[in-house]
Length: 78
Image 1: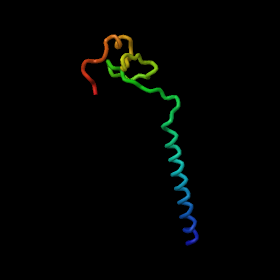
Image 2: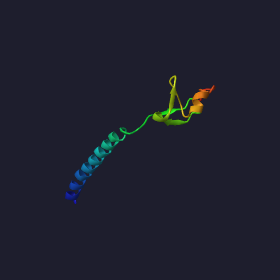
Image 3: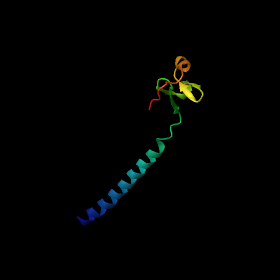
Image 4: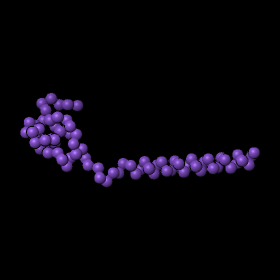
């Protein structure tokens, strides 16, 4: 019985350490998505769109040409 306990403890520790290292390796890989496009918020309506599809003017972004012409919303949204 003591022999069985002697082998269960080291095996459990090794499995626990292996799982812990596996989780930390997965956590480090997730944040770096190579194809992620930055999102920007329309200054008029507040809709979030990809930056490459947005229209920029004076450090502000708009989702459509109509909103670009109308300009930012008079009341600031939070």
